[in-house]
Length: 379
Image (cartoon, rainbow, N blue to C red; front, side, top):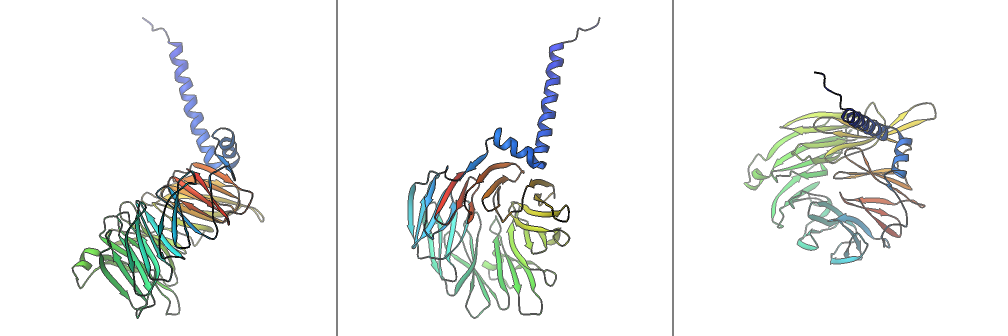
């Protein structure tokens, strides 16, 4: 006996298939076609934001950054906390005027650049404060509140001191010839990584050194877990531990990853025109591609460090700067900023009538900094 065709069911299946095909097509066009993306963002997703439509903080030569979903402004030795509505919620007195700072999770570390004062803050309270001998040149902070402070101006070229979340001085590493360009503490508090550069020779020599914190605490004679020297002339810019505690090292011409005590190159900039590059839990870079004698295209590339999977976001003009924090990427064109997530989707498109000075970021909040104000954008 022949079954009767269920026409309604067939029509429903066809509609579902067509909807899926439409969504996939629009997704591909959205990420790779600028005109399609601009149309959908403006008229469908309503992602466009303009200047003077957001809460704002009036500032006067203050230093600003984002911490714990607050905009924090440092002015005249006072840290002032503002919420998303630009309302003042708290303040802390600190003896700092020109800050170095790092944020990670619930912690903020702030120090006087080329000075001796350093503070660790959690929430809106000072956890500990120190005065170091020498001039603070660099600091880093992991999610557990461990702090590494690089110090110059002593009998050594650089001294690196490590503190735990309670301010206990764990150990000190002395460098007689190299400068610490950057440092990083692993997420499990077991390792301190130093990016060192020696400028005393004919050419630059950059080195990566990983120190076992456990061995340093026991005064072991051999605290070096792993070390390697980059090719002569390669300049290390930044290092960062990934979520699974692999060390990612950004140079001026390539990126390395240190995993299981061995190093491998992820990507090289030698044969491409990379305008900007940065690392968070992914490699973020902007590449310029010449399409003719007087024409160029620009791509934001988001590369997974473990799998090397690449997502591409087409840009319609040349950016002026790039900022990344956590899962948020800010591409600044001067009077326009694209906020994009690590999956390659636009979060917000901000435009202004005047030149933007800088962008400050967290995963949930952005501050658009002008000469006399900070506008607060909820991401």
